[in-house]
Length: 280
Image (tube, one colour):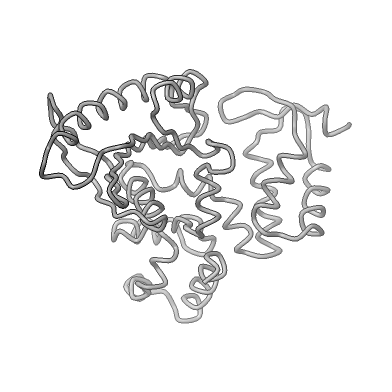
């Protein structure tokens, strides 16, 4: 059976046609060579059947990449790794803050700001030059959930209230110029249309094109600690509880691995995987 005639089942339950191009693109993003990518595609294609879930396809490709090179597999599991930052949204807020910090912003997490009408707790406040932006993070622990238009409607009204006070307060030496909504899932068409109309910035896993969350992470090498294929779930949660959210942070805070009782041999493997992943 031709692979183009195979229907696959997404996490939302929706059935779509299998796309060889999409699989190839996601494999190439890991940095794996053309030969490796082609070999994996051939093996995955041979195991396709009608109604196969995207999860099964992912698991197979992930296992094959892991055999070739662990850090390819780490890059491949980026989307899943961001879900693993849960169950609360706080590590995701810190993760987004870190991405902005490495993009040249001064950041504050969980800041209470006065609006014209009421006060607001803002997930991330980011300053660069004489401009300030406020960022609200919408974390979902399950795939298939989209941010609908209610989210940007609500966030934009908060942004406008904070802006009305901020830009008339003489104590502030920056102008509040941008409001953002960042999610680890996707936005509905209505949410994107409304945000474009009112000037609210959206950032999701795959939006905007070529500058989405996945693109920024790959470009900056800012992988969450949860991408590691060598750390256990318990170890990852321990590190997150100590505010180690990025892989590159662990390279500076290696002593946490000693706290976890990690052997020297395994410690070297973990740090080597992370250094390769972050190009450090």
